[in-house]
Length: 128
Image 1: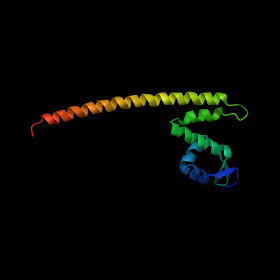
Image 2 (image 1 turned 90 degrees about the vertical axis):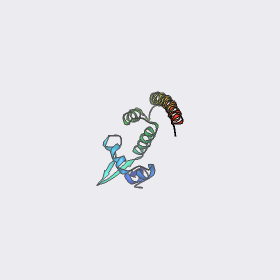
Image 3 (image 1 turned 60 degrees about the vertical axis):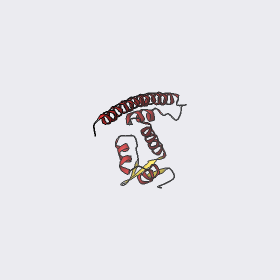
Image 4 (image 1 turned 180 degrees about the vertical axis):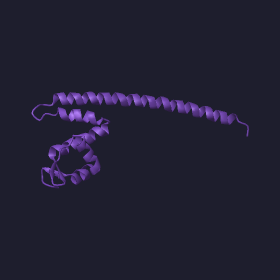
């Protein structure tokens, strides 16, 4: 590790099990803003937390722009009620989307079951 408050790109890649290319992508997207020491990128604790939040958002199915929106709402001098409410709203929308997908999958499974049953019936009726 570079110093207690600064992290190299390799440190973060290892800690979060992502590639350095992934971290550079988030940097190019303006979400992470490392300091430079020559060619070395040095990420702050704030950048580390942002990366953690970006990756968590990705696992939850949030787009990069949704994660950016939530991260930009953070205000260390407030109770962040606005940010938390926004996150709850996004969680609810994501949950509704997943529930709709589950319903669609169940319908498709039912249709596959029906098609399979008809195929098996047709095979049973075929002469040997």
